[in-house]
Amino acid sequence: DIQITQSPSSLSASVGDRVTITCRAGQSISNYLNWYQQKPGKAPKVLIYAASSLQSGVPSRFSGSGSGTDFTLTISSLQPEDFATYYCQQSYNTPYTFGQGTKLEIK
Amino acid sequence: EVQLLESGGGLIQPGGSLRLSCAASGFTLSSYAMSWVRQAPGKGLEWVSSLRPSGGTTYYADSVKGRFTISTDNSKNTLFLQMNSLRAEDTAIYYCAKTSTRSTGGCLDYWGQGTLVTVSS
Image 1 (cartoon, chains in turn green, orange):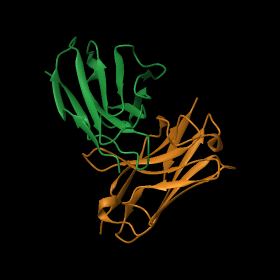
Image 2 (cartoon, rainbow over the protein chains, first blue to last red):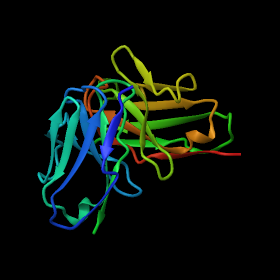
Image 3 (cartoon, each protein chain N blue to C red):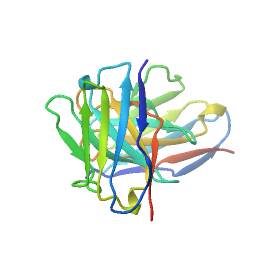
Image 4 (spheres, helix red, strand yellow):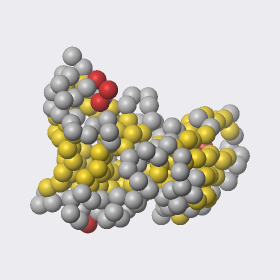
């Protein structure tokens, strides 16, 4: 199985801050890495697919980068609606493992 | 508009069976890979199973292999998850999700609202 290590597990930040979340895969997964946002009581929503492609309708302050084993999700300027939990997921091989999640809280 | 609507969750005793349904609209189920993902209370996301439309290849997490079966009824545009020999650790919200491609290597671009399965005596 491909292990995915996501960090940090939690993060406090202020509106307007630039925030970075990272995921590391236990082996190369090329660009088969997706990022999701989940708000309490809601289903996850895809933000970034194939490591760096912005899903339609997602604000451009979200960006993704990386390939191989190391990946990054960046929010360039936090907005109030961005406080949520974020997950990465590898879709290179089954089982399609998720990272442990990063809870982004208001400072 | 793509919509996924799960049903079939509820309270079930350990060892029991349950069948979850996911009614799809706005797209043709047979054209995309589909998945089930679960989330235990207060925990993270766990991939459970996926199905490719072409050839019907299925994939399962080790934790459910041999107990759960993913399938579709293309005439009803509905995805199913048959869950047998349920355990307390299967308690979770179960989401169905559409993959962006025919293969299972795409992202999960649409999700249902989830259905809660509680396994308890």
